[in-house]
Amino acid sequence: MSTNVARITHIIAESPKGFADAVQVGFARASKTLRGITGLRIVEERVSVKDNKIATYRVKMEVIFILE
Image (cartoon, helix red, strand yellow):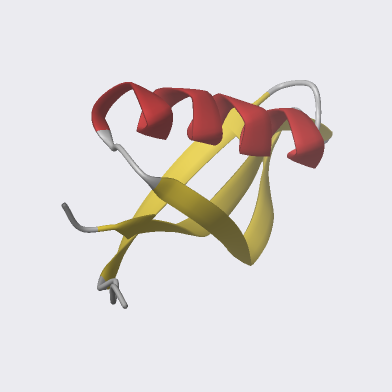
């Protein structure tokens, strides 16, 4: 019987398109350097405003991955 140990790292990603796209951007970037990703947890959502308009959508997320 094998056991796994997981680690969590926090990342912040942004997109001008929306929260869902910011999650995709963050996941795509995390998957370039982290192996064994098993899940994501969105911790926070924020927007930046410029000239009275939403400029970017930001997500802070936990990336969960299994240690090798």
